[in-house]
Amino acid sequence: MSLVRLNIKGISYSQTQNGAYALILSEVDGDRKLPIVIGAFEAQSIAIALEKEIKPPRPLTHDLFKNFSDRFDIVVKQVIIHKLVDGVFYSSLICERDKIEEIIDARTSDAIALALRFDAPIFTYKNILDKAGIYLKVNPKKEDDDEDNILLDEMVAEELESKTDEGLQVKTLEELNKLLDKAVANEDYEAAARIRDEISKRN
Image (cartoon, rainbow, N blue to C red; front, side):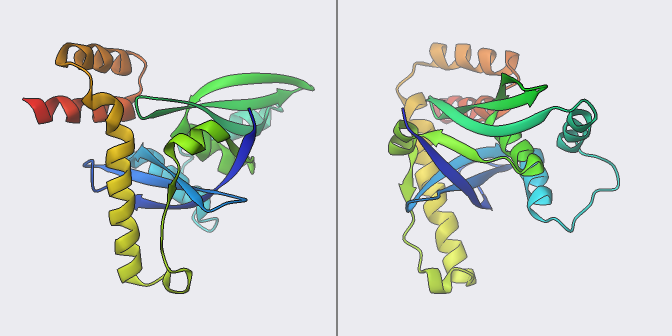
């Protein structure tokens, strides 16, 4: 399967889920965008990494990971978003130490926060982009205007709602509760929030 490189387009507040944000990744050699729902803490960490001038007084969790890795000569070479199941993206960190490469499972939001700190490229597979990628028709000349930013947020929210919830809508309450327990056990709180919202809609 061929890999597609992605850049970070921006972060917008998710109108579909309270307290969540939409991280927008952009196809480098194309026009598609990949929206990913992330939590507030991860959104803050990514935003701080994007704004190079902002330096927290104490290291955030992702900064601590970077400092730890630097101390022990571990480098994150790249991040690959390798799987999409029920609206949840799964990622891997490709790390190297002493010329030995290791693959480490990570939540996508954490992986991207670390990719920024290591200046590591972000990739996904073409089939994932084919499945979850969207086209945002925003006038590039007016992209900074408030009106267009609102339009972008609305379009992203609409697409996110359809992309992330489509796998959950066909499941029974019993299946949803099992998925919720599994997500909490795996500390995948992004998925847990989506599942909980779907359960709440039916009660």
